[in-house]
Length: 341
Ligand SMILES: Cc1ncc(COP(=O)(O)O)c(C=O)c1O
Figure 1 (tube, rainbow, N blue to C red):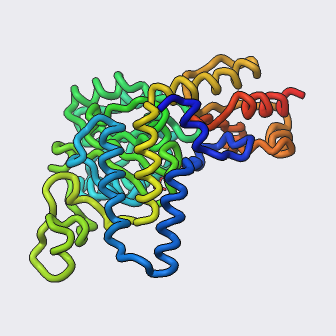
Figure 2 (figure 1 turned 135 degrees about the horizontal axis):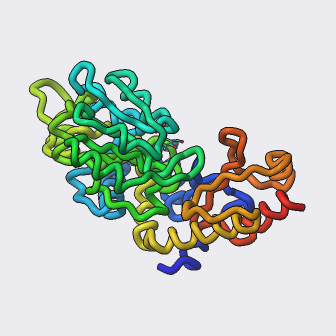
Figure 3 (figure 1 turned 90 degrees about the vertical axis):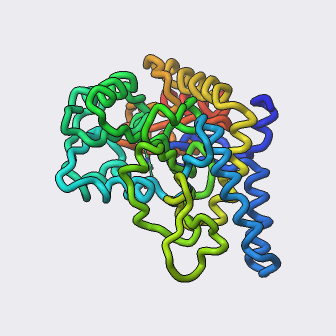
């Protein structure tokens, strides 16, 4: 499917430059969800047909990130997906994370381990032989900066440190190979354009050896349908042992959106998004950054954008604008005009 065909599947109200807050669903996924919501409202079906979306979404996420579906767990939020590692680290374990990090990849470590933070650009230097885990986002939520990946991966390999990457602001526009990391976690309600409530985690076999399924439940059972009642504990092999019982409606929206992303191709989305971000920055006399999330400072920016109907976010006093496959040149030019007029 080419980009123009894909774009016809979205109906954004002009001026949505805020996918870093939440992404907009494609029409087919939205319509699937409406059908199921009607079934729910009227009790027309069993829940089991809804549940098939969960494995579809898991498989689509595995395809998107180049790993086996047996290494992908489904859950609800980033912090929840990280907790079975954070809570099971030995007492006093040293974890290193970026100071600027979104707290869902910071608080789980702070709550359970000896957390040290360092600025993202110096994260690699903070990894030493005592460091059990290094945690960071591939793309920073506040300003779209990309992590210095090679430095971090090299330092982690040298010190036998587990690498935990949050790809919430990356998967869906930036090509990502999950197998470069021990854990890669992604909330699906932004660039994967799902309803909130679906999160996927690539949990490598190496990482799983350090984790306990602290939220073990029937759905994580080897045979979920045979795990409703009674002992013994009988969990699935692989990452599925860390599944949460799924938020059905979120999984239905996620399955349709991630499938579609795979058909369009992330490299196509990457080219489109970064070209729009570059157009925006260049028009404002700033150098392109290669990210789909950018920040700008301009006098009275927030009021001017709001008056022009452009929806962005404000982070650390700057305007954060983000560009996805349904963003148009017209959206960008309207924002530039509002800021420069
Ligand atoms: C980098 C990053 N990670 C995670 C999240 C959301 O985390 P959670 O799913 O724990 O709410 C966000 C939301 O803005 C984010 O930007």
